[in-house]
Length: 338
Figure 1 (cartoon, rainbow, N blue to C red):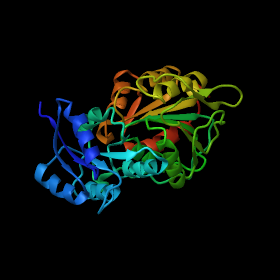
Figure 2 (cartoon, helix red, strand yellow; figure 1 turned 60 degrees about the vertical axis):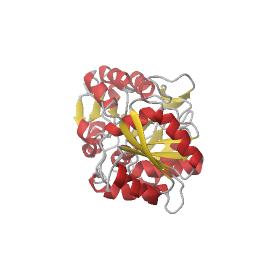
Figure 3 (cartoon, rainbow, N blue to C red; figure 1 turned 45 degrees about the horizontal axis):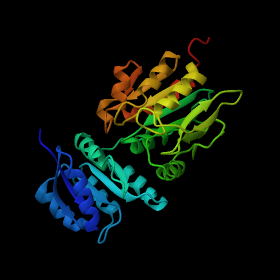
């Protein structure tokens, strides 16, 4: 099997050396070159034709964000951003993911970078002009007491922006687990809140689930699940990773199946691995309507594929069709009701 060819772009010789050592330790990866700034990188891309680029966010001559945008417009290819995990770095990283970066890793911890590089080489990369466009915002949606639960991972920033930006201000109460580092979800929820009609917030302990509100699981430290009672609420639970993740989509979906059952709709979007498949199967078995993103519109057809093969997904839809479909499902009478 041909090795994945990687170009490392970073203004720090030390970081270039560290990333080279990390990636060179994987027999399926070949570091074909390094560059200290975007201008060097531009020449190296033409000469070396890499499969994947690792790109520093902060660099001289041109920022990583500016360079990423040029790449995604002129020569789309998988790019993994390298960023400090500060709040400022997180905001820039979320912007990079929105532009089309495959994923982000934080300095100086490069655990998992080799696996992300190999996954990136297999991913579908679209130019900015080919990205999914949100449907027109719905003005005729009738509020309901249903709960919408969404799980996403790699490629989820673009996917969630596409789906949620079409939601009206009175959308169903919505809970989301998106795999992200701890500092990223604060920036991402703020970004979603700026561009979406409903109120988007990072989920907090005890927050009541209300129509017109979207709750994003905090990254990296706790699981988001739903607790019952007269007024269902968000519960942030400490504990080990589930299905390889914390927060875990499986944990969220499982709690939704238990508390809401057929009064819920589940959606599983693009992402690596299988997190969410078992939880969505529990939702479907409890009577919930379930949708999976189809292979053609996924950046990585991993989580939706496993859920579909498990029988957890009722319908597979393209990303651009999911927003309208879930609103229709949430507006419908409960299954079995008159």
